[in-house]
Length: 342
Ligand SMILES: Nc1ncnc2c1ncn2[C@@H]1O[C@H](COP(=O)(O)OP(=O)(O)OP(=O)(O)O)[C@@H](O)[C@H]1O
Image (cartoon, rainbow, N blue to C red):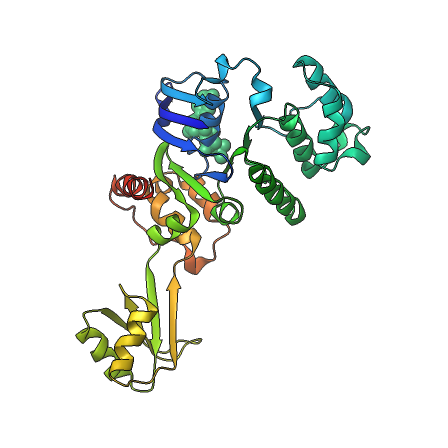
């Protein structure tokens, strides 16, 4: 429904978007993820015909935005929630939008109800909280009852209640069969909202996959094993060709083994065959944030301020180790993901 092909945007010497290719399907929420400055807003602006690509194309339902006959009936967007005259009421703002775009006035009342603003529709939009402004922006995006919706960082600055509302609303819109593209720099939020993730860094595609595939691909899956005869267990697993790391006791765990490259089933079966008792057998995969850091690591590493902002919510023991990964590695991974998923 949204097709981006070789999309590129240069601002002088800045390459904001670099040969980006991806598709956004209807019926699911697609998260558009990347650290600050990765090129998400620029890409969205090009999809919406607000910025001209240096190269490549962005189409909605097969045509560039500028060639859509009745654009608001096809594509709705929320780029900046504060884009509203502060002295206008929510209702008048929407009426003005509807009139300017040839949309029926009756739709104004419908969208006010949909976003839960009917009771405050005659209040000045300038006095709205950020959450209410976001709802008004979403109401505007829905005026033309479009099949395709783009939201740029819709949960930025919202309180937890507002975040949950937006998340559920996006999912509801997708469940109606609409194409929903939502940008964010917060992976943990997107993991709860989206089914698919398009991840970019420094304007380039890093991965294009389902959330599950993204995590499986990007995180190491290991198995924690503990039992009374730990040395024999270790020998048995090594004999079985598995990678084993011995972890001494720490404040939380007694001594245990960390096995890589195997499932809990495989480890359990191997040890059962030798009648080795187990006190613990637990699969562990890295966190979503770890996965994100692993893939966007180099794209963030060179943007000190961006990295700080993005990592602000990670505890110190989850911060990535120093030193940028070798250049190009992540881009290559991204292509692999794309190949595997399509
Ligand atoms: N109008 C512009 N003129 C010059 N440079 C720009 C312009 N718009 C964006 N850029 C640059 O392009 C790059 C991508 O910016 P963009 O806003 O698209 O990223 P983003 O992923 O949306 O980030 P954020 O989440 O911070 O908005 C940045 O380096 C930014 O400084």
